[in-house]
Amino acid sequence: MQSIRRQIRGPDASESRAAMTAEQKEQKSSWQRLKDYFGYGKRRIDTSIQEQFNSAWIAMALLVTLAGLIFRIPELLAVAAILLTIVAASWLWNRMAFFGLQYHREFSERRAFMGETIEVQVSLSNHKFLPLTWVTTGDVFAKELPVAETTLLVRGDTGKGELNNFWAVRWYDRATRTYHLKAATRGFHTFGPVDVETGDGFGMFRSARRLENVQTLVVYPRIVSLTSLGMPAKEPFGDRLAPRFMFEDPLRTVGVRDYRHEDDFRKVHWKASARRQRLQTRVLEPTNDINLMVCLNVQTVNKVYMGVIPEHLEKVVSIAASISYYALTQRWPTGLLANGALPHSDQSLKILPGRSPAQLTTILELLAAVTPFATAPFHRLLAEESPHLPWGATLVVISSSLSEELAATLLDLKATGRRIVLVTLEQGPLPGFLQGIIVHRVPAGALDELDLGIPEHGAEALLTPEQLQQAAIHNILHK
Image 1 (cartoon, rainbow, N blue to C red):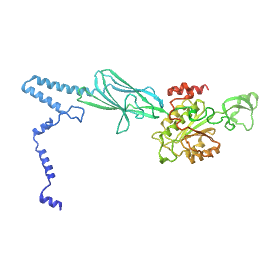
Image 2: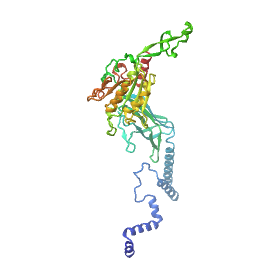
Image 3: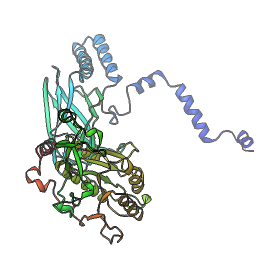
Image 4: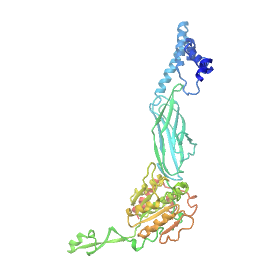
């Protein structure tokens, strides 16, 4: 019915206007198209773009040249030559702008502890004879680390911070600017890439490039004294002289004796046996060193669907780092077990006890990168990994709260002969059946106002990570 009415009364007004517009475009004269080409009746400068060169510059130079030739006016020919020279020089200048242009970013420290200040130097070098009157750089910075001298621009598309700079460098020149970062958040923080934009000095052309200058800054968790966590300064993990935890050091032989049938055949001292013409067994020195296994629960609430408490997570990570540092400086083999994961991973963290010089750095880096994503319930992880841990290891369990499942798992491990130490942020009443388990409650607010440092070793309070590792190695080797 609608098509019949349209045939009776003719096309609509909108359809008529569209048809007339199409016919006008087809019948547009050459003079009108020429006026549109030169922008007659329109704005000559488009503010939506930053480079001001377009084909009208060439057309204008050709018209001025033609007018100068027809009317024999040398001045017009000179103006046309100047226009063409400026366009050619600007184009060549823009093409050569990125040649020999280098952007550098240097950190005073590539590893730092929370609370430290890191100096960052950014520089732009121009290794060519051609100067650059303007260069803009947008360097991706970690927005979690505030910059003292300026405020980072947070990009809406990526959500990352960006440090913007405007430069003007002469030929064979280098400009440097210094910034100071506050290590306010632990983790692996990525810097870069860098978006660089430059062009000719007349502003006619511009070019942009992305430099894949990516660097990583590692911020370790805070390390505090164990006394600040409410733990005793002496024997924080219980009496080391308990008889059932006495072992023999295979590297320390104090004498020999006659072989007995219950002796391990690997302890036979063959040289002494040959000398005395009967089997001799090495007598080893007993040792009471602790094998420490730091077990960290990143789940800050009993139910995963209830979310994460970031403050509690940072506290338990700091407690794990502090205990690991203390144990390794005491020359105790120390390992790490956590139900957290590294970024872009779903595997739990596990390092067997060791006391090599690199053990401290490895544990701190894992704790710096651990995420709040729980790979498995903590009580289940403890039960599954316990048979694979060294039998004499003391399990230091760190958890912000104590659930019924975790308490039952700790009792089961205690019943099998495991030595358990519980460090918790729980301020409420604990179950009364946790007998035989050493429990340390971290006082409320203990980690809120503590400055960065290691109060137990006053001179080491402000050491860099490299100096801290050297100090730990020195304590291990000279203990």
